[in-house]
Length: 219
Image 1 (cartoon, one colour):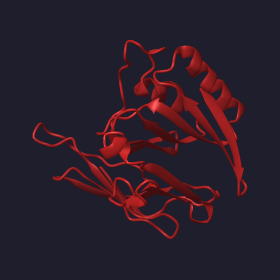
Image 2 (tube, helix red, strand yellow; image 1 turned 90 degrees about the vertical axis):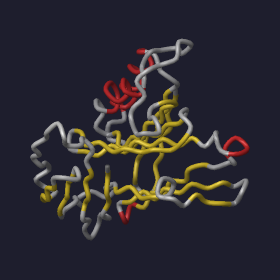
Image 3 (tube, one colour; image 1 turned 60 degrees about the horizontal axis):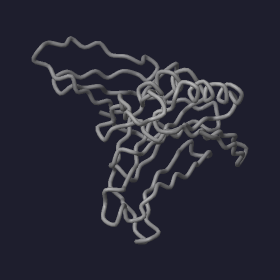
Image 4 (cartoon, helix red, strand yellow; image 1 turned 180 degrees about the horizontal axis):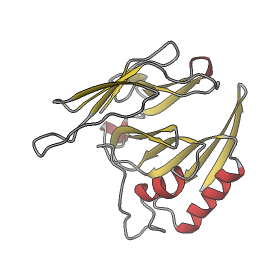
């Protein structure tokens, strides 16, 4: 459990790292540190947080120091601290990501762990390039050992994030469950669906994009 402060290109960040299934004392410590640096943009790094399916981990191993799973970290730390915009995790082999809107902000949550690939992961690691002038975070996956990139959509992608202030997404969002479709302005923020037993509970949301934010689809 530790943290680092970064000041680059006029942007102030705090990166806070949590152990596997932290005890309540570590959760309290994390909340205290994040409150002390409430004006910093916060990245939370948790040893275990997401499954490959994008669901939050909901259990801890018996030998762990504490009982706070990924779901508990979301509930007790991420939701409570409005400066957190990004959560990074490993432990579970594979890659996945999800994004959740909470209290008017988007929180990106990423899993990347390549240990099950050949030679213990082949040296693959994540490179995240912050581009304040574009309000964008470009994510790449590279192995210095193999001098190779993984370029599929799960390992190379962009995250829209307002680093300069003042710019907000505009345009439309189309939400669909395969049978029903709803297109609304971003400012509206919701759609009404009538769900029956025959309907699927899987939804997709497609954002049209604007001058400052790229279009994207989330399922």
